Amino acid sequence: MIKQDDQPELEAGSCAFFFDVDGTLADIQPRPELVFIPPRSLAALDHLSANGVPVAVVSGRPISQLDALLTPLQLPAAGVHGAERRTAAGELQNLALDHEVLDAIQRELAQACAEHPGLSLENKGVAFALHFRLAPELEETARHVAEDFVSRFGEVLALQPGKCVFELKPRGASKGEVIRTFMQEAPFAGRTPVFIGDDLTDEAGFKVVNELGGVSIKVGSGATEATQRLESVDAVAAWLDRLQSTLLEPQEHPIKSD
Figure 1 (cartoon, helix red, strand yellow):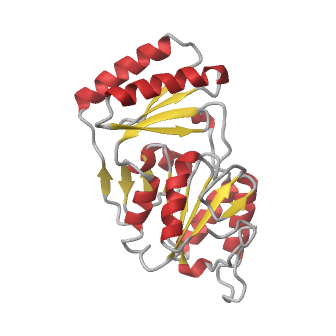
Figure 2 (cartoon, one colour):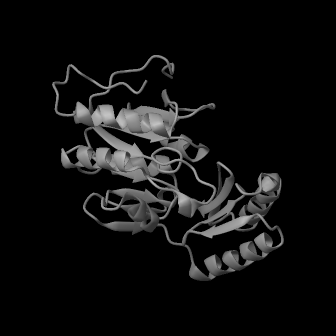
């Protein structure tokens, strides 16, 4: 593994970029619906894409929410940790769970949350998120509830811990595998993958990008598979500014993520 202070040079024109959203392009907020991507970063993503650089978002959010956050952009996207995917050609691909099973899980999770005020349930259509950001003292309660559901629905659900959240996602959904799939298709194929994320949910993506000989960048502190770091969401925005401003310059001016 490359040391995180040994930062390889990055040539935008030969790369394909994958971005997490919450905690990477956008600051984390007390509630998911309060999150926004700064216009500065949206403009940079638009500039990259308009100049032929493949850009995709890979998030735990559903694609419908990603599109709302990225308006007016509509990028290739993987939602719900890869359970939903929109290709560069606009084709939608989903990992679907049985509706009766989803309804049963929804009812039981709603009841469990009702018993613990402060624990918030988010239904993502094909996955569920138990948020405890507004009640951090309920972390162990949320963990216990999530683990109980995975133990009973383990054939279809997998547990994905995150920042102040435990998610129940379709088994087989992985940010790493969905990035691998993108990299087998135009316009991503043949380029160096670059993935920027901040959370435990992004570690699978870092691992796959490293396997593919790409560049993995973690936002913030903490142990990680990533080979590089950016300090914060603001640092990501500044890095994007530098990346877009030199995109059309000669390749002897590569961009680093430090």
